[in-house]
Structures are given as structure tokens and as C-alpha cells.
Image (cartoon, rainbow, N blue to C red; front, side):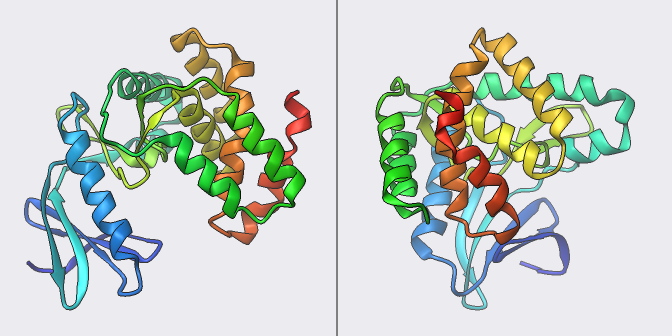
Length: 249
């Protein structure tokens, strides 16, 4: 495999293209367990009706773990939105339809979202009172078993030359409550500064899912706490604002 053409560089990983393959190479200090879990998530989601690049191999390249996937030629939905601002609403509509189609699937072997959120709340740099409130809130939320992407944003969707969408990056995939997944997507719009888009997204999601906006909002403090665990200083003040659970009582 040739690691010559770089497609993107993300946190502790670099994605290369070699012909019809995309090769995601992780840094040497990246958790082997997390890498293998990502590959397992990808393989499990392949067994659903969701359109994703197929995993081809898990290997080591120059002492670093790598996941080899099908390369999908195309542009991300994020790029298309920026290149064609007049089509923003059209693309957003496609985006929400895709997420709703993901939530229509079940994948019983995926880790449970509720367990992941519980663990993240425990790890979050918050005082015991706030953690207790968040654990209590999570325990009171309805249990569901829908496929949740966990990082569903326009940069994780590739549209190929035939206008067929593929959903990328299943490292955070779980099974659980679709509204929790929507709450995370809402926060991701905010974190990129697209506040108007965040509100449009949430209204559209709730309309298409026939879900009360207040119900999705009840998940926001929980997913904000899980995002806080990543320890990004530039996000802390914003996330702490959303973690104020009193706002949604």
C-alpha cells in the first residue's frame, strides 16, 4: 500500500488514498482497543441497510495500526453546502433524511448508547452534584435500540458522482435513543458556528420524526457532558452552558 496521497488529517489519525482504497492510519499512541472497536462497529453496520464504505482489512503499516476501507470518490455534504449556499436547505433536508434512515435500523451487537453516556458523565470534569443530576436524567430517559452514529455531521457524508450518499466514520456508533443522536448533531452544528443551521436542523429532524423538540433538548446536557470529556479548551465554556440542566426542567 502506498501512503502518498493524503485525504485528511484528524486527531491522531491520517487518511490516505491508494487507488480504490482509503487507508486510515492511527498514531502509535492511539488505543488499540479503540481501533479494533471502530473496525468492529464498521463491520457490524455493514450488515444493516445503511450505505457505508466496506471495511477491507485491519493491518499494521510501519508499526502503526491501520483500517483499510473502500475509497468513495465524491464530495462531502459539508463541502457541497459551502460551495452551493443557495442549496443549503436542500442539502440539509437530505442530511436529515439520511439520519432518519440510520435511526430506522437496528444492530443488536453494537454497544449501548446509555452505557457509553453513563461512563462519559462519570469521567466528565464536573462536580458531584451536576454528575448526579445528569446520571438521574439519563436513567429517566426511554430505552431504545436504534442505530446511532454518534458523530453525524455533514463532513461525514460523501456524495458520489451518481449522487449516492455514503456515511463515514462509525467509530462512535452505538444502539440507543435516536433523539440522543440528534442532540449531538445539534451541538456539532453549534460547535462549527452554524447556529442558524443548528436550529433549522433541529426543527426539521423533529418534524420528520414527529418528535417534540423539548424531548431532544432534554438530551443536550447529557451529550454535552460526553463531549466535555474530549478536553478541548475552546469548547469548554460553550458546553458548560448546555450542561446547566436546570434550563430544561
